[in-house]
Length: 225
Image (cartoon, helix red, strand yellow):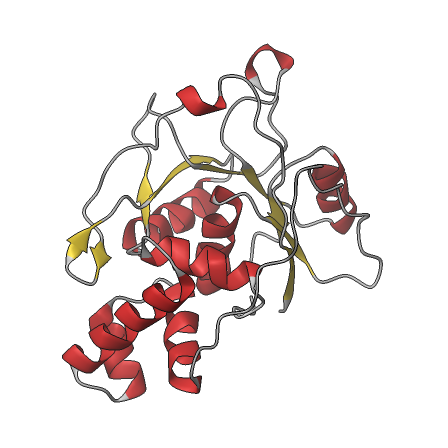
């Protein structure tokens, strides 16, 4: 299932946003360095779906479960949850809903993204990374939801980085949460060659981490969810 990703910041910076921490730290692979993965909180009523999502979050190199009570970079839920105090503070939401009308209502309510609950693992990982980086994610639809306005200070679109076909394959695997060993095996490369390709992708995209590379790739239209 193809997804449409609106490459826009889903909300403007508001007072207090800068005070929120980046979330818990878990060692993740960015070539050789440790980076902060996307800290994910789950608020799912269905036990089976929650268990599936917990397994996906735990297994993906670019994601980590947010400890109870700690700040999260993304919130995955099966319904639109009210914000504390009625404001817009809190992590962006990815809402999983079977009904298309419910997904449309969630988008109009200002959530970071929507998906059906049976979305594939790679789609879920990429969508979580996208909403955590301020993008809007929605399933492709013949009747698109009207886009939210860009911030007034938004500049011209960023130029699309020139990646080689191999680097695009590597970026697609990064979006699926693949580690360097998995990339090497999938593409028939040595581990060191795969690692070099990952480093090249990060450098060309100007990314500080694998998750940042995926988010930049989505904004540039290089990652098709």
